[in-house]
Length: 277
Ligand SMILES: N[C@@H](CCC[C@H](N)C(=O)O)C(=O)O
Image (tube, rainbow, N blue to C red):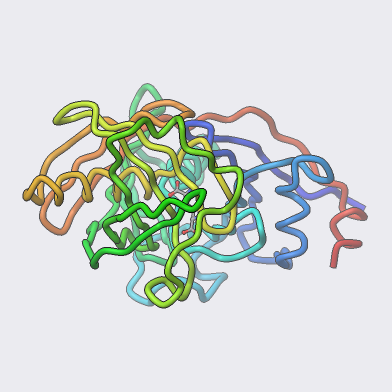
């Protein structure tokens, strides 16, 4: 019985298992995703990126021009619309596997096509679409209420800009949020403004927990910080525990630039996979 091909990669230490599956022949159940992402009983990752031909999976918006679709799953098995760090890793994979000629092409996602550019140094710029301010809400961390700006980057975010050091926050327990405002859950970002074009951020991701980076979260953080300054365009670096990315926010458009790394490739044991059901 042949194994199942996989690659392991990360973008600023937000780590993923890639599953090349052009014809969508794998049955990607929540149980299989959760086991694969488990750091003890599986390979360990924050999420799964299934590499599938758009024509083989009826999942994204129908106006997609992308040949390849990023079927993203969170570590708990749930489906999310977009992953900014994942799409960089996905784009680099497509070029290195000879599936896209590069350097620029669209990638299909549940949030719509994301145009990417793979640079000579193998960093990737992603056109992330609009970062839309949708209101305000509150996150509760350790009993403390932190007001935040809600931002839609294709997936939902609540960004709390804090005066005190985000490194001091205890994120071991899941922060709480208003489920009436975010019935589908939300990614929570905690941000310090270090300068007019420099932020520091920690993130507690929907469907995962605290991660060392979140690409859509960094775009949301820059959009929220600009909004709080009374402007809606600008650029900033964002330092996260896993490294640094660069973000630009314009009217109806935003970009994210950062690294994409591969660490391993191999085969999953098919009997293990089948037994997970
Ligand atoms: N890590 C990602 C975001 C992944 C999806 C998120 N957890 C959600 O449920 O919306 C990124 O880099 O953007």
